[in-house]
Length: 111
Ligand code: 5GP
Ligand code: ZN
View (tube, rainbow, N blue to C red):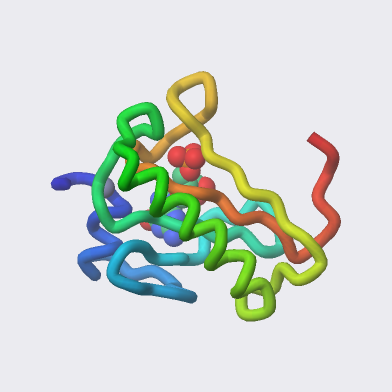
């Protein structure tokens, strides 16, 4: 998708620090971290919002959660982590390409 910052990162048109990549998604460092470890898991397919996702998309999200749990050491989150999806304006979504925030590396504040 043109003008989508995450699509540009996926295509290699913008730089990022990539920790993982397969055919379906990438895990990169967030450019403006909110925790000691702040990563973004981003499906390669451009879908703006979780309420626009197909069943294929939900399967991929499940696979991403599983992969994160298996990569805790590499990601620096063995002591625990928080996964967040911001949806829409009230949710604080700023990039309209579905992504999961992975937060950890320290004791996070209570929500
Ligand atoms: P949202 O607010 O949509 O849930 O999250 C978007 C996230 O993307 C923010 O945490 C923001 O810091 C991050 N972000 C925005 N632009 C870039 C970029 O160019 N590179 C990286 N690595 N992260 C970005
Ligand atoms: Zn996109």
